[in-house]
Length: 385
Ligand SMILES: [Zn+2]
Ligand SMILES: [Zn+2]
Ligand SMILES: [Zn+2]
Image (cartoon, protein in one colour):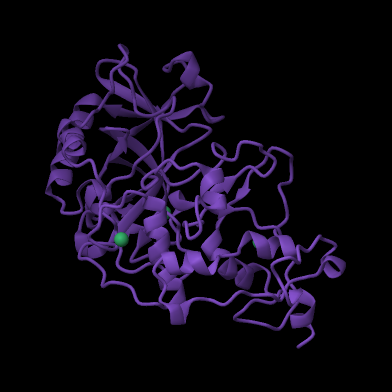
């Protein structure tokens, strides 16, 4: 299939890390990224070529051994999305089968309405698992190159006796010998990953000078809406969703597992002490709420709020754009970064952003304005327009 086109909808195999184990997943591609841009198709034979710089995005399928000879894969209703570099992908040519009657009752519930599944030969799965494990050992990026996901009912695949199926022994060994994750942007092994990346992001946003990018890394923090966990933008697995009507915000934030380090949401949001990194996803008070009570809305990293406002609520005033409607007090408050925090994140004094006071008063915004610490208040500053 060297010369044929690979298109969204085609299947591929990839190694995925879950906890301390690496195993193979069957993935249905949803999009193809080449040189950072989404493309409609690529020549199948070029996917593994590092120069082609291809990444495949797709949904992990449910897979079951349905006979000694073959396994049947189906799409699930709540797919896990992964992004995999082309050099760590193997393509498969499955047979399309009617999956009804082949799968366990539990899996059959997740069948798409047509009941379509993909049958794969066990022998070729084993062969391709060995090939992928070899490629993983060979790549310099190592484990950083493969997606990390949380365990679910559909993945990792299990053997009838409950052990992990299609496990990569060499990949799993790599996890054991490589526990600490180095920063993507400097040589450190951060203890508090979120705060460390947050510091890189804030310094970049303020133009306050960042160390030179390491080799074999994403390079610089991305300019637009960088993910608070990896500093990159536009990756589907970095998307954060939040439940606005939930009381326990800790468990209701969902995101990128690859760089996800557990943190107490409330503590991180409020800041443990003066100067703590408060870059956590928040809910924008200007965006429409969820359509239904239990729906989720996108979470926006606090440091990215000015960017978000510029792109989605340009009618409001910002430090960089003083003309416009005064920001509602609660929105301003939600995106506030203290001078102590800027300094603690390593922003040099001359680049620290001065407090922005062009916000709505109680009268204009219909909200209570806490005047105690704001001697001149919002009204006086607004009068300058
Ligand atoms: Zn760093
Ligand atoms: Zn990310
Ligand atoms: Zn918004």
